[in-house]
Length: 365
Length: 160
Ligand SMILES: [Zn+2]
Ligand SMILES: [Zn+2]
Image (cartoon, rainbow over all chains, first blue to last red):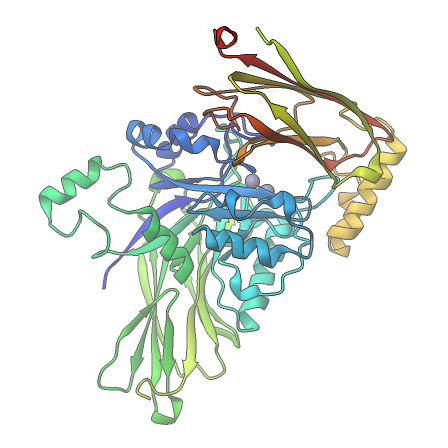
């Protein structure tokens, strides 16, 4: 099982709402940032989608269809479908969000909360999430990092803690980043987070056949990946978010004859009564998007964190490496990897994976 | 060029109206080739400093954690409060676009072949259309908006 990690920007705006750049200008800048795909999520409209294919072909980048439901009571990102026929934000009151999400699903789209704790009205209208959610399970994802240099913002730290709380309550909800990209200019100090979505290599079209297929895929702006595959990766939580190196996480059951490897987003079963444990591997890939960031000369802290506390910690140099540990996972409902270091002169969380969920019990029922 | 005015309205709103949607349902006649919407509102910015400080304080207290509030009360990024009214358009079959942007004066054109960014080009079916003004934010005591819709006819349509 090989996973291909696709570098995505999941929250952008253009002149079709309140941003200053066109889709073409943004796609050009996105290519320079070594992104594979960007999601077009203009406020309350889909009119920008008409230029999607043309810009994809011209700029060599995949474009996901989306929009940002920009309401009085919260901002919700939708991906994958024109949801406006079944889900009209103008008819959605503060207690009606469950119907709104159902309408988004009926349209075939995903629904994710954007920047839940950004300051709200009248400073930033509707930016703070104030909808009452009845069915948390219906939500497809939550944007825990919003804007450039996300680790420096208090509202993102709060969103990250909130995500952790949801996980601890047993909700298996994916977490992503979004630049909330409004103009192509960027101050040189800012760092950008990227959401990597994991697509099974065999499912990625055009790559299985070796040389010739690879060549055609290089010319394919969508890099052999389809929109439904990326949506499925979000749905499954095959997600790794970073401002620099890409973190991957694997769990393998030990003490059993047939052991399989679980990846990010999957549910691993352990049976402590049968003496089974999880062998855990964190890989840090420092070769991705190398022109965009630097952590040279730093010692970084890599953590394996679970619902019941820290599983392992390593102080690591900024080079690609894999780290292994073994745990019986007692009391852990989920685990994820986190990387800490300094960017823009501020220490903090620089990268995190989504979870591998843990269930106790034997696999064969 | 525009031979018919389909809607011409002026409304005064107050902070009590924030989070209200004002729906204007109007008739688009047969043989309409192009619609032009003129939308303008004023004032845009809240100039009253005392009121501004009060509103920022309330927002900070409501949305931020206690230890961050003191700095936030005087955050220059927060001290520009403005009204935000947006326009969206629906034809008899559904959504035709929205202008979610801060401009206080906007001209929106929709026709079969072109449309202002935010709006969907396409046939302009006759029937009841809706123009919704969504009052995202009203921070000034009074705010006035003007909304006008004009139609241009298909050439030669009269000669039937
Ligand atoms: Zn937003
Ligand atoms: Zn946004």
